[in-house]
Amino acid sequence: KLVSREFHPEDTRIRVGDVSIGNGTLVVIAGPCAIESEDQALTIAHHVKRAGAHLFRGGAFKPRTSPYSFQGLGEKALRILEKVRKETGMPVVTEALDHTLYDLVEEAADIVQIGARNMQNFSLLRRAGQSRKPVLLKRGMSATLDEWLMAAEYILEGGNPNVIFCERGIRTFAHHSRNTLDLSAVPVVRKESHLPIIVDPSHACGRRNQVIPLSRAAVAVGANGLMVEVHHKPDEALSDGAQSLYPDQFRQLCREIEPLVQLY
Ligand code: PEP
Ligand code: MN
Image 1 (cartoon, protein in one colour):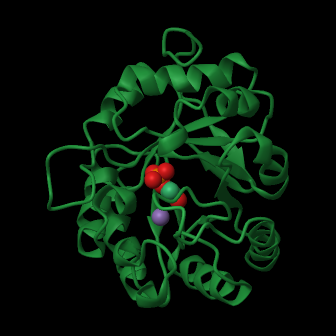
Image 2 (cartoon, rainbow, N blue to C red):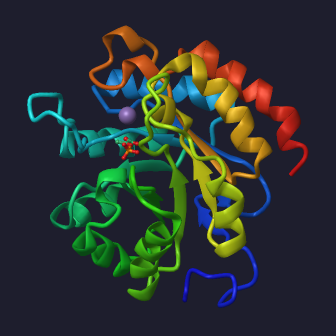
């Protein structure tokens, strides 16, 4: 299989702007759950850049459980993301919710995210395969590792070798966190596949006080990167405020992982 180490023994490195993912360093992606306004996005982007983030994240099209929840600013948010890239120099990551939106999203994004709920959306995976734009493929909330690897296989088989895995927690019986971060997936995916894998502790735990310790653990277990939600006013956030770090906490996170990053 194209995703497997047997097919491709060396680690795949994915270049995004000046950043390289999968090359033995730790890449940090940070930003709000959703782009809410130009002011909000630029404020958070400047904070996270100063703290040490390499890439900026922010949802334009949001996959919300309820149709009455904030669905994202759509195309307007894509224009804001372009402005963030221009002002800060950070490449941007944002989600394509379905294949019909792919053209729009891939034009604006440096990495196209495929969300947990879409991990086996096969028309979306096939569309991602037709592009060369790097894809951040999140693990489905009840997906086995084999299902996740095979979802990536769809994209590689289509001709796009630039896939990054993202572990974001799976459904268990636990109530102390939103999902359960499956850190055991990291060494296994790194052994089975040549593709990089990053960890999203924010969607895994759903509570900001668990994000820093889980980030330290993710770095220690060998993740190629982290993706963390940050908001300057989490209480007013239109989505996922409870898990969003304050800018100071994100600075703290970057400080705490620094000694671990030296181990890479
Ligand atoms: C996100 O990262 O914006 C997101 C919606 O995450 P997930 O698909 O993992 O729930
Ligand atoms: Mn979110």
